[in-house]
Each structure stands twice: as structure tokens, then as C-alpha cells.
Image 1 (cartoon, rainbow, N blue to C red):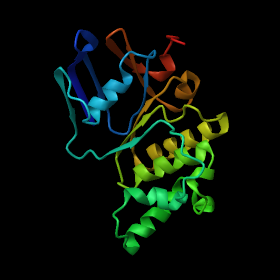
Image 2 (cartoon, rainbow, N blue to C red; image 1 turned 90 degrees about the horizontal axis):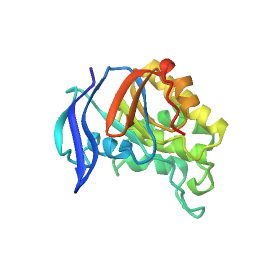
Image 3 (cartoon, helix red, strand yellow; image 1 turned 45 degrees about the vertical axis):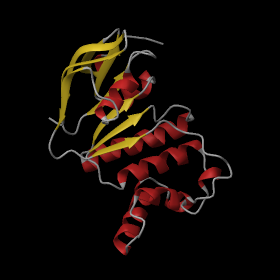
Amino acid sequence: MILDVNDLSMRFDTKTVFQDINFHLEKGSMTALLGPNGTGKTTLIKILMGMLTPTDGSYNFSSDVKLGYVPQFRNIDSEYPLSIRAFVGLNAPLFKTKKVKDQIDHKLVETHLDPIKDTRMGEASGGQKQRAYLAQALLDNPNMIILDEATASLDPAAKEELMGLIKHLNQEHKITVLLVTHDIPLAKKYMTDYLYLNKGSIRQGKMSEFKEDFE
């Protein structure tokens, strides 16, 4: 098991976001975190990332966990000067040894960015930018990745390429995946498990059996 969540509750003043939620994630699993807008998915992710303290309950990662995070696509100004390679390297030490440079190059190859590594981030497509965020997260060699709406705003081809990469990372490197998404067809195609957060409680199951439509 890589994550165990016990009786987790979160309240802001008088508003209860969720109460006494329990779930666990197995090492190497691929889980979609689903639910309508405003049900607390982002709040839950912020708690797991250590950015918020829950009101009650606890969560425990396995002792060997190394967490990577890929945010929702953020619009980068078209004048943004850094190349894709330099942008990915922002997550590396300032003084870049040959080993670090080799690692950056390896991640660029793995995320299919090597042919365009000298392109400025401001000129890259949405899918290329999102893969650069993924490459950045991979520099720390995580064994679990949280993707927060990482496929939102991407065109269908870019979504498929990103999710194909995520599946590759899961199968080849045994990286555990937690994907926050509203895209049920995409989740059904690539994820094996789901967490459905709604009305303050959570349900866990197999993605192939997910029936609830909340669009």
C-alpha cells in the first residue's frame, strides 16, 4: 500500500467539504479522482501534498514514497523566453553536473520532447507544455504522481499522447498514478480504479464499473 487515508475531514469555517472519508491506494495502481465541481477534489489533493492541514483524521504514505505533481495546464505567455529544455531544468539543481544534464535529456526523450527541446515554452502547444510539466516532475524520480486536471484544455490528440505517457510510466517504472479528471471516457480508457468524491463522502471501485454520470 502506498497511501492510507483514515476518517479524513475538512471544514472551512461552517462549511464541511468532506467528512470521515476513508480509502487506500495500492502501489502501482492507476486511480481517477472523480466528482462534480466544488466537492473538494482540489482540497483533498492539497491535503495530500501537505499544503493544507485536515480538520480531523489522518493520511499516511508509505515510507519510501517520492511524490511528483503535475498541475493543470497554465497559460504561459507567448513571450516566455526559456526553452523547453531550460524550463524542465528549473526543477534541477542550479549547478548542473553532467549527470544532471544527462537526466534532463533522458526525461525529454521519455516525454517525446527531445526533437523540440530548443523551442521556447511560449511557442509550444498546450500538449507540449503539459509534457514539459510532466518531465519537470519526473526529474525527482517519483514513484507516485498526482495529476491535477492535467488533461483539461488539451485537444484530443494531446490528451491521448499525455495519457499514453502516463500509462507507460506506470507499466515500465511502476509509478503509482492519481489523476484528477472530469473526463470519464479518458479515465475509463486509461485508469483501472476510481475514487468518487461527492456530497462529503467518497466511494472507491473499479473504473470499468463506474456508472455515475455527474456532468
